Image (cartoon, rainbow, N blue to C red; front, side, top):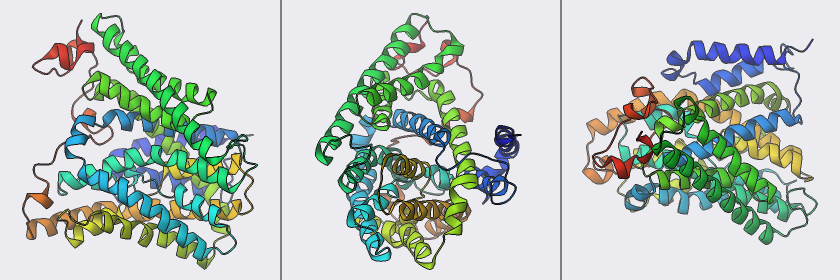
Length: 448
């Protein structure tokens, strides 16, 4: 008898039952799912019978990341980002490239069996951050808006940026990979980005057209209104993959286009997609703990531990410190920004892609290093988020500084995933949604 589905469903119910308490405790939902996965996995109870190469695991993880990328992008106000995006621009434009370079150097030094190309693959896989693993930091009012927004926007954008870099790195290191499809790294990079962007633009425009125009005419039933963004994310992914582009880039671009054409944060409309994405992400961490992490733990060595620690500290924190030069940030602020770069869902998905799409000689070492780093990050960032956020807030209150660091006048660039929607009961009727003074321009889909 296969109890896998029943066990997964029971775990979801268990985490849901204590979700309010988990949000304020060191045991975050991703950590709870991972620990439950370790418990029910093959190494302990043996209740989950998927394998690490099972297509179901990758499909689930990719679906979660697709929805997360779309909704993350739809949360970002591009106009505000142009005006007040200094911190995320530094983290992405300076910190991210330096993190990849530092990660490549660290992997090459730690793992002599890897080629330089394989070391770069490890670095790219572990470059994206997952703000959900340190949710207490990006939601804490004790931390100035400027820094919370920087971490949140960085997390929302770096997944999509790293996708084409990963594909190009794999194509360069493994000419026989399925990713390359006979294309050179340069051609692959252009096609992944180009066709991905095309799919995203088409899907984003169509979603906005349906939501705005059909909503304006009262043609969308309230119960179907929230289905539209999820369908749009799937459409973007499907178009891009059919054209041999990146479905993840497409989902992200679709969210940006949708937000730009909608003109307002579609918080109520996106809520279902956000919740489904979070739920799928939780199940992904459960399967990660049950299937992917145990083999990595059995293969653990001091060198792997050293690399994981370096990846979460020096490889991340030094580039962030360099990127923050000239911002007026003091040492504790820079340390906070550098430490809270958790590795999570995107790194798991990228590792699964490498496993299924490439034939790298060092593939086993690559995924082992990635899984150990992600597992360590889930634990350390989850446990430390709330205490360090409170401690930083206390330090800032005792050591005030003018507005350049306090961020009192920072522009709101994005909201935390789902947070705005949970402030009041959900009501999706068009006439109950918040309206701006110029309703016809700001929320055209809300009119009957």
